[in-house]
Amino acid sequence: MRRGAKKDPQSKDTVAAVDRAISILETFHQGRAALSLEALSAGTGLYKSTALRLAQTLERRGYLARTQGGEYHVGPAVLRLASLYQAAVKPPDLIAPVLRELAEATRESAGFHVRLGEQRLCLYRVDSPQLLRDHFKPGDTLPLDRGAGSKVLRAFARPYQARYADVRRRLFAATAGETSPDMSGAASPVFEQSGELAGVLTLSGPTTRFHAAALRRFERELLQAARRLTEGLGANAESFHERLRSLAPPEGSARKARPSKETGGKGSMR
View (cartoon, helix red, strand yellow):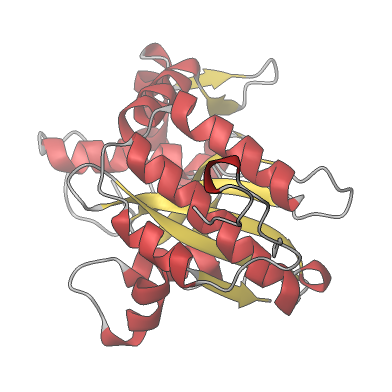
């Protein structure tokens, strides 16, 4: 029970009990992986006796565990649920190869993110092969008002907002210095079979590498990767084909027409 509340901690109000238990789990985050009972009580606003009962219940069910020093940390049951969530949201075997190819093609960190309330949750990530990069990993979250990935998630949230019309038209967004002063990002949406937004593909790295020419290349790479994932999920990807056709040809891609055997030596174009 939260401090100041008048309800008995043993209330049979099931929703409130679940809310209190979840508040215990949500107290843990990066940098606070193991917490004492006092820290759990302070972090949740629950009386220590209530926090203890909830922690003991969560421990019995495997959602919390104890260190040798007696501090609490997240238990193995959470990992099992996380794996089930990942499998239900998007097939890892479909996303992982696309992320690897995207990171290899751009040499920047590639990720797949979904919306979690008013936050953006990273589900999958492949780090840049370069030493200078941002340090973000699966399970980390960002506020929904920061970064290119968040902008795409907001752009395709219903009801659509007019200010994101350009993001919806381009299927692409780029930002600089929003998640970190020296970091930039770019993102494209991925759709599921129903046509609704499934998540967002992102690229991130130092702003010095996200200059105008690089962003033009990143846009093409992201759109191609998002198209592949969208098609893999059984959705119509024609909008990606149209957008890719509208882009200027990649620099250095122009080639002279070669003689064709079928046309008796005259150049032909496919």
